[in-house]
Length: 62
Image (tube, rainbow, N blue to C red):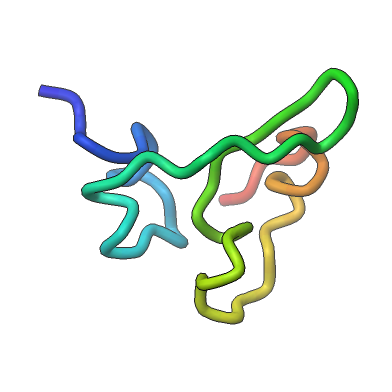
């Protein structure tokens, strides 16, 4: 069964409890790109945002 929340919760190194149960809202990055990540929510803990979340996934972390 897929997770109730974010589909990346099981493989994201930044996953939080909220990711397990709730899908985040989309945030527009540009006129052609958007992302859905709880790290971009104002209530998220203050962590260094992964560059891929800001650039639309142009870099791979690992």
